[in-house]
Amino acid sequence: MVFVVQPCSKKGAFEVILKKKISLNSVKTEGFEILARTDYVLIMQKGSVKVSVYPSGKIMIFGVSGEGEVEGLVKSILPI
Image 1 (cartoon, rainbow, N blue to C red):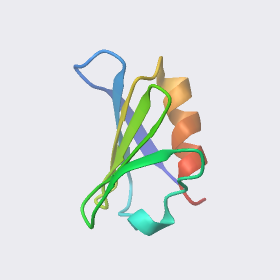
Image 2: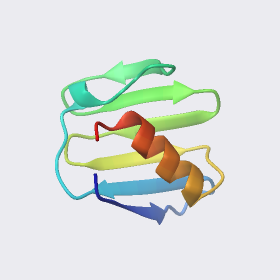
Image 3: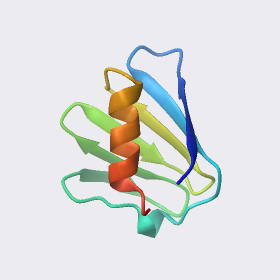
């Protein structure tokens, strides 16, 4: 899956933009605590890392140290 990673203004936060829309039901949630799940957003957490996934293809990731960690996390939760 093709995506772009951009740092956010908040320290330790990144925005990921996918090249296509996704189904929230296809996101792999194993190992994550689901904080909220609606038709519009899936919010999950593992340790200090919080992930918000939107069907538009936008993913917000908080509590990570860099782009390498973001890319690995995105690849682990998205269907390939």
